[in-house]
Image (cartoon, rainbow, N blue to C red; front, side, top):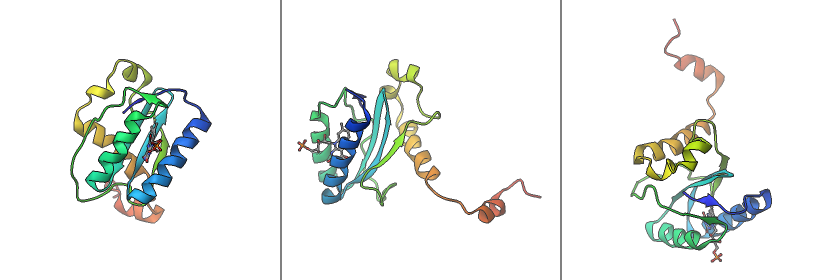
Length: 139
Ligand SMILES: Cc1cc2nc3c(=O)[nH]c(=O)nc-3n(C[C@H](O)[C@H](O)[C@H](O)COP(=O)(O)O)c2cc1C
């Protein structure tokens, strides 16, 4: 989690281009949620690669107040096919007021992971027929 410094289209494009270039080489995948008032990023990969990449990201002057919200081992990736998926912050994420109040930095781990889980779920295309079949309310 961090606060953008100079949030512009070109800056974001440059960050993503660099991220994708290095992540490809370093076996890192993940997602970067962006808004004028926040960057929220998930980094996935071999622990050493994640730590090295994070150490570089922390030093980047294009953002400030970089903090780790969740750091843990898993046996799977949420975004294995993305060198860095980018998504604008959705209305179901923290509001600008909540961000300004520092709410995100104090969020419990399941809440943070929940944001990325929802992003992951919304990236899955459910076929229309399959969806109708799955609806529990169908008679
Ligand atoms: C919000 C944000 C996210 C970033 N994400 C990544 C990333 O996923 N992988 C990466 O290698 N660099 C990422 N970067 C860029 C790094 O900070 C850094 O520029 C890059 O690792 C190259 O290192 P260098 O500038 O020391 O050559 C990110 C930067 C910012 C501001």
